[in-house]
Amino acid sequence: MAYVRFFANLERCNMEDNETVWMQITAGQGPDECCLVVARLVEAVLKETAESGNRANVIDAAAGNRDGTFKSVLIAVEGQGLSQFIRRWQGSVQWIGKSIYRPEHKRKNWFVGIAFYRLPEMPTIRSEDLKFEAMRASGPGGQHTNKTESAVRVTHIPTGITAVAQEERSQHLNRKLALGRLYEKLDQEKKDAEDKQQKQRWSDHSSLERGNPIRVYEGADFRLKTSRY
Image: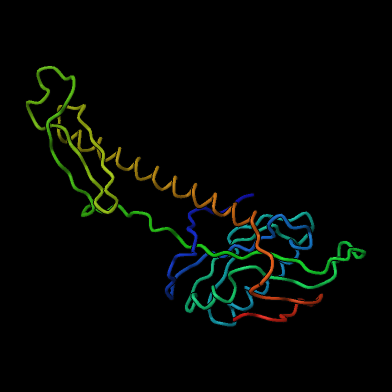
């Protein structure tokens, strides 16, 4: 299943107005009927955000087995009042209706899950965020070692991540090497955060909570029956 990356779980995040949040609507391990509910909820979300003056766009989607259905959809929602929007939608959603794929099926309650994410605050590398320190080289190096402060350590102040270079006799060259290594470390830190968030999204997709839904829809016309907000 393909997902746009760079998300952070929103459970402990305090949202502010005028920013973008990412909304995941997922059928979890549910059958085709749940994938149909996902598709119908996407329509409902796009309609509600348009009516409220906010903006919503589908960023990525995993298609279901049936035409026009989705196992999971990611939507970018941007605008004001997002904290209220999240409260109205976050949790499980129930649809009460007869299966259009299996008319003989007795089950009439279908559940999907909704979770929210936002962009993690990854470091922006600015010159004022960097601290360079000259120091004596250590280890093998012949007569030159420890005679001049040619080695360089650079620290990214916001994260505390450091990198060192001491191979070159020129402090100027070591400065460039240290900076390149720092960029690599920051990039790896970013990738590690993305991997952690990706695992969280897979967990959210797999563990769908049923019962006590935040919203209940009913009937073939998918009308809103009850909402806790």
